[in-house]
Amino acid sequence: MITRGVRSSEPPRLAQRILDTVRRTGGWRAYKCIANDDFPFQQKRFLEEYEAWTAVEQIESLKLLTETKLQLCCDSRHFCGSK
Image (cartoon, rainbow, N blue to C red; front, side, top):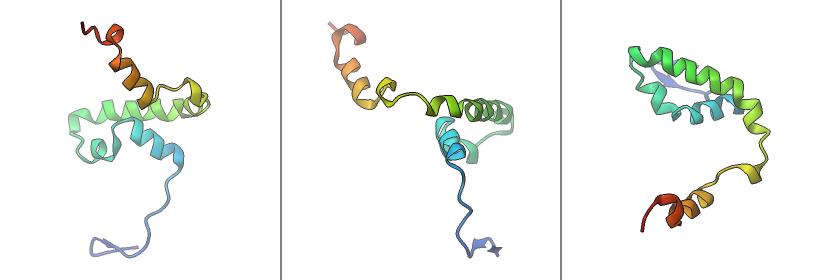
C-alpha cells in the first residue's frame, strides 16, 4: 500500500525473467531516465530480450563469455592488436 508517496509494505516480487530482461536491456536507470523518443526502441529491446530469455537461460555456463575470459582476451596481444 502506498500512502502519501511512501510505500508502507514491501514491493511486489518480480519474476526472475523480468529482472533478467531489465538487466540485459540497460538496468532500471534506462527505464527511469527514458525519453519519449526512445520509448519505442527500449520497448522493442525489452520485448526481444523477454522472448529470448528461455533460450538464453538454457545456454551451458561453460559456453558463456565471462569476465575472466574477457580479461584473458584483452590481455592477449593477438586480440587487442597491441605490439
